[in-house]
Each structure stands twice: as C-alpha cells, then as structure tokens.
Length: 326
Image 1 (tube, helix red, strand yellow):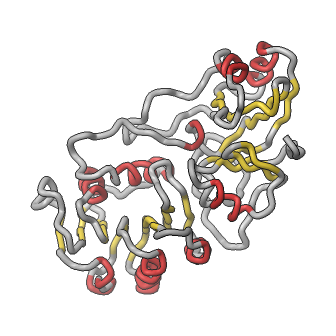
Image 2 (image 1 turned 90 degrees about the vertical axis):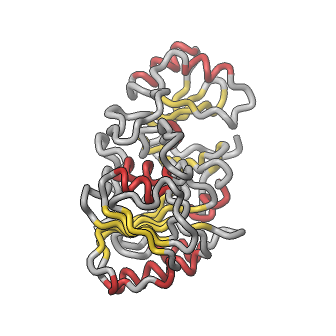
Image 3 (image 1 turned 180 degrees about the vertical axis):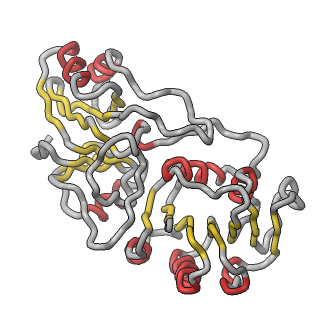
C-alpha cells in the first residue's frame, strides 16, 4: 500500500473522473485508494460558511465539505480480521447499514462475500419529495485480505454520495431538472408555493419546470425559447432576453434566483455579485460550468461569499453547484 492509514482520520471520496480536482483542493494527503483520499484531519477553510446539513439524523463534525468531495468518511477505523464472518460482525457492531467501495481492489470476491452478510444501502431510487433516509450509512473497503478500512459516519446517506431519483420521462424538457431535485433534497429547502423565482438562462426549461411543479411563480429568462410544453403555462412568465442583461432593481424582491446557464465561470461570478450587491434576492442556486480546465481561482472566490457552499452533485458533470441560502 505504501502509506500509513490515519486511524481516526478522514476520507474524502471524489466524484468519478474528478480525483485530481479533489486532491488539488485538499493539498497534502496521507494516501489514495481509488477515488478515496485519506487525511489525518478534516479540511478547514478560513472562511465563514453556513453549514448545510446533508444528513440531519447524524451528528457530524462541523467541518467544511470540500467542493469536490461527493462523500466524507469520518472517524476512519482500521480493523484486522481473520474470517469473513468476523469482518461482518465487526462492521455490524459499528453501524446498521454499510456500502462497500471496491472499484480499486484488484480482487473483489472477498469484499463482496463480506458485504453479502451486511445490510446494504437501499436499492430503491428516491421519489422527489421523499425525506432523506432515516438511518446512517457507513462506508468500508479492504486494505488487504485481512484488514478493513471503515467509516461508521459518512456525510451522505447515499452510497458513495450518489442520490438517484425515479426519473420523470415525460414532463421536463431536459435532464437538468435532476440537479435541482438533488440540491433541494440535500438542503431540505425549496421554494414554497407562490414564492417568486427567477430562472436565468432557462432554455429549454428543465429548472423552470421544477419550480412550476412546486407551485412557485417563475420569471424565466433566455434568448432561446422555452420548450413548447412550458410556454404559456400559468405561473410562468418568459422573457426572450439575455440572462446577463437583467437589472436586479427592475424585479423588486426575489425569493430565489437560479442559473444553469452555460458561460465562463468569471461571467457567472460577476452576475452573482451584481445581484448580491443589489440586495434584492434572498436565496441563490447556480451551476458553475468549467470550460476546459477547472478554474480553481474562481472556485475560491465563490467559496468566499458568506452563507454559501459549493457542492458537486451526483448529477453534475464538470461543474459545481453554488448555493447561497439566507
């Protein structure tokens, strides 16, 4: 293995394809197992953030979730064992439900025999609106044929941080709606019926569709048209204009601002700051989409905005979701 696993340390689990981004964010690590980066202590950024509880049923340390970590393995345990039954018993003694991470193992049969003796994560996708799972989910892997690495307390109640939903195949005009479903589920916050939402860069209307289904009043802005299924629906006002040309003072108070627009991160940051400076919007959810290389400087500037957080959702690609909840 070539490194010492930090007992009681922390493991940060990267989204598929984004381990380099996570390692850049973490800095020094003790070692890496596949997509799992191991650290002696939690990462802490010197900025004031409002914690977002992604699993309120479990008391987790008040640490900053790195943007490129899809799950955090807290309180790492290194557990020697001599048999499959002994390994399963040791894990059961630490928690009721377990998810196996084995994609980095050269041989997976032994690990899967252990997992068969454990209660695993639910295989049923979420229906949007369902509450988060009530019971904690631990994560584990093998260091070798006789040693477990386990975390009984993870930041996500979903296996590897992947929140999957029963998809709507007929209503939304694009699959972008899944990002909003995921962020609303993790935050346990969403627009209430009658609240005013501004969806900037909305075409073809995946996010506008979600907001309309929640009963919100939606002002949908894009130079390209909305999908025909949304055009003209009551509660949706469409403006065939640029998302970046909107004057915050022209709208009055806005409850939620959303943007999934394709643009360079610097341009999105400038737009966000203009709205924050105006003081007319309470809550914001925006997708930072990277063109080519990840712009870590812009990521840090978004991170420094008070009361906000950066997340890599299971439904994000080479992008981060920035949320500012007041």
